[in-house]
Structure formats: C-alpha cells, structure tokens
Length: 298
Image 1 (tube, rainbow, N blue to C red):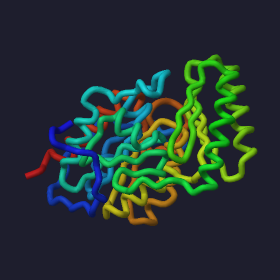
Image 2 (image 1 turned 90 degrees about the vertical axis):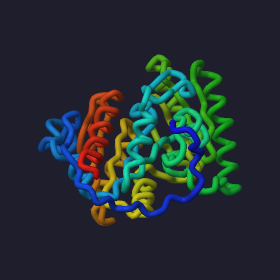
Image 3 (image 1 turned 180 degrees about the vertical axis):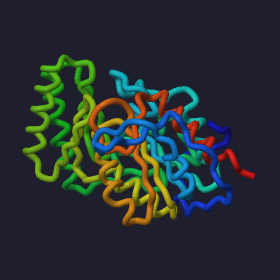
C-alpha cells in the first residue's frame, strides 16, 4: 500500500482515455470452448481486447479470489503483494480498480487493507466506499433483528457456526462443520427466512446470507462502470454471487456500451468467459494485464 493514501471518500469521476497502444496478451488466462457454461482453453488476445477498449474498470472479488478461503472469516487476508498489484493497475491512466465482496464495507476495508485510489464495493453491492453509509428503514431493521434472534437460536443448536452481522444482512458461516450439521443449519435458516417477507437468501461457499434489502455485485459493477465512463470491464470471482455478476454483465454490458470479460476462479460450471485455477493465478493474470496496459506507454 502506498504511503499517504487514505480511505476512498470522494465519488469516482470519469476515467481519462489513454493515448498509448497496449502490448501483448497473457498466457495464464483461459478462453471458453464452445460450451459457454464451462470456460476453458487458451486465452490469447482477451486482455488485449479489454485494454484497447479503455477506459477500463477492473473488479476483483475478495474471498476466494484475492484472499484464500479460511475457516474463520475474520482471519482472511489477501495474498502477499496483491493489494500493491491492484494499486499499480489503478495508477495506470484510464484504469480504475474495485475490490468487491459480500463483506460489510468496514470489514472489507479492514481485512483487505485497500485504500485510495482503490474503490470498495461491500455487502454484495449494497455499500460503496464513495457513498455515505445508508441505514435500512425501520421495517427492514425490524426484520433484521428477528433474523438475528432466529439465527442465534440455530447457532446455539449447531456448534461451530459463525454469525456475521452486516448493515442490511446476516451471514451464517458453516465452513469446517460436518456436512450433515451444515446442511441441517442451512435448512433451518432457509425456513427462518421464509417466515419473514422481504428477506433475500443468497447461498455461497459454506455460507448462507439473509438480507433485508436487495443488491447484487453485477448491477453495482455496471453502475460504477457507467459512472466512470468506462469502455470495458473485467470481473474476477469464485462464488455463487460472482456467477450472478457474470450473468448480469453478459446480459447487460453490451447494451451499456461496454466490452466485458469475466473470469471464474477455481473449478465448477460457470457462466464466465474465462477461467484461472486458483488465487495465485489471479495475480498472474493481473500481472499480465498490467504488462499489457503499460508495455507501449510513452
């Protein structure tokens, strides 16, 4: 992290379009085969296409993409040098970088160590580092309290569950629990959600989130790209909510005048355009992108 940077407070403005021509494309990224739900194979030229469509917004999920998944969510940390790499990308003319997460914004800032000029999108798009924190209305707060009491009862009968409270949601973490215990807890929490109209249930990797407001990473990224005046967007993620973001960008980016590429991290069927196998290869891809963006800069 560069000395002297502070938490992002000002609204992001339009990105400038650089004059330089980018260089070569990377080898680490993979291009989809004929079956769109199973991205694979060689990805030559993909990042070059994004670079040529600058201004560029790069969005990177936190858990499972920048930071390896761990049993205790509060012990998650980004891979060494990953935040410095994001800063290097954000320092390129015509590039903005956002760290995206289901985490509460304050927790995301704490765990990632990200600071200006990096942008932060938290709570699956319900919070942003450049906006004033907004509290849910009274009815939503009442639902949130009812959910909290219900989840605490579930946690009391399922040892090992970790509850995470956010401004508009509660997350129940089951990582490390036996499969049958986790499945029973998820079933109980889903039943709890059905008792409260207006609650949105989002499953993830060993986590179930119950939210009292509706948000999404995809709409948040698209709105940010439009606010910045971006010509292209790259998004990398590994989880269920990232798949929804991939699908949203595929459906709406072109209509917004954007070139988009999405990258699935890890195994599994995906709506993404491309795939990398793990978190270290995320850094390899982003390093290649940085080289593409800067190689021919005057």
